[in-house]
Length: 358
Image (tube, rainbow, N blue to C red; front, side, top):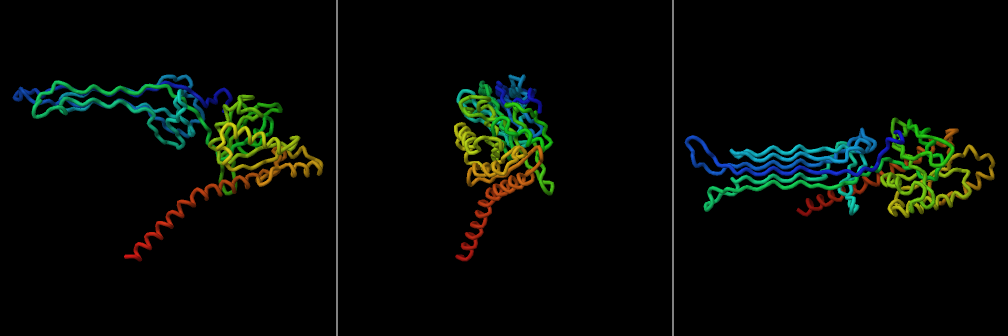
């Protein structure tokens, strides 16, 4: 995923199709000179539909397509023939895309599954033909309905990457190096801050052909929630991660303080992020040579948080890290399924009680 090609924000103008007008028509045949009304209905206008496509990773294909219009419906015809519907317009988006109203910020639609279709704008309804307006007192109505207008609005599309694990840390903490070692992803790596300017995704292989997705988010600095550094532009990408993996280098002066700053920036951006599962990886352990430094690091790690010490360069502690992540993912999945199973058991028990009462 090239830096210049990663587009996660576009603003486009979309318009659904107008409905076709109903027909004002009367049956006229050789032996039926004064037939009744038989005007057909107009066809509905085309919808604007968002469709999830797992093959798309960014919104790049929409960057230069600012206006997307659906087709209008055709008018009705005589013989009670309904006009053709306007062709729907499908907008394919990567998974994790949301559509928002640019003025109110209201979320209009959300696409998270491959093949999922969400109608963003409905096409206008077709007008009724004059056949619908005949009555005992008006047997020859000379009017029909016009079609409804379609909807027209500007929409913001934002991509929030879907990943199981999101890497959180200061610039140059070793996030990109870790992702490149654990997966086939090839993020840019250098010894200066803000090397990573866009999120990178990688599939991490695990035991028995299992895998999970890890996301490398551009580094956070103190004051990011207020716009410093890269600001909050990429913080939204960790909103969909199941686990937040805080990566703090062993060379940090105060590991507890770095963790506190990172946690505070997430809280300032979105307090709901604090409800996610959190764990810590102490990186760059290959730079620690003294036992005294190792003891100091252990005393600075926040309590009640699972942690592991790793070295991406020496590939130490990586399997232990993957075991810790996979175990947490399994617990989260079990807690999600458990309530449904309990509910089914309660329904069975209620059914047994009902049978016994009978």
